[in-house]
Amino acid sequence: IGECVLYVWAECLREFLQKLATVEAAAKHVAELVISEEKASDSNNSSSMNSPSKGVDVPCPDIKSGELIIDRKSVFQPHLARVTQVQQVPVVLSRLKESRKIATATHNIYAYRIKLQNNVMAQDCEDDGETRAGSRMLHLMDVLGVENVLVVVTRWYGGVHLGPDRFKHINTATRAIIDECGLLDQHEDKDKEKKHKKRNDKQK
Image 1 (cartoon, helix red, strand yellow):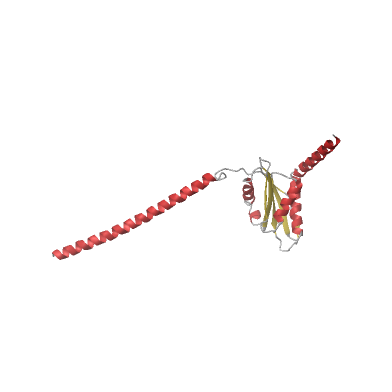
Image 2 (cartoon, helix red, strand yellow):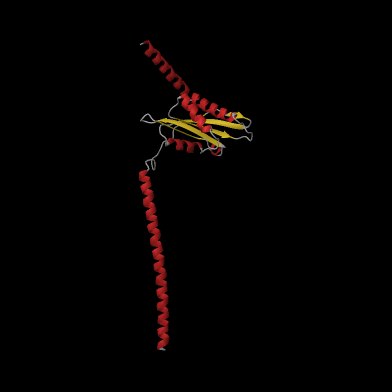
């Protein structure tokens, strides 16, 4: 009888120790997960602090959409927003893409030129799959001398290849929306002022 009792107690003790080891292992695993999550949280907080644009509300400027250009079932439409900081560019793009029609377009090509406080010109462009279209837009905007402007040209492909004509339509749409917003007149006025100043300087 004594041996049976000892055997039962030994079995109970063994089961208890096994359960204890399992519980300790589980507790250790949970602790490791908590520590890992805390490190990830600290890393995210540090990144947020080091990034000035995080957590800062950037206002979306007004967006003007221009007339459609249609050629062989392809449709082009320009959009323009007056921007004063680079952070506004993705905000404008997101606002435009709230329209399902624009979001599902074949291409949303854009270019922007923003004059910063130190007189440095921040400028960039995006082809969105329409090779070299963005750089052509940016070059046109540079030639026209427009500043603090983002232009987006949306293209819906109609199934017929347009060849070089597609670039002509993209630039035409870009120039048209700039003119429609009165920015082309401002550039021409600046040119007149420069010519007038040069003329006066020569007379002196």
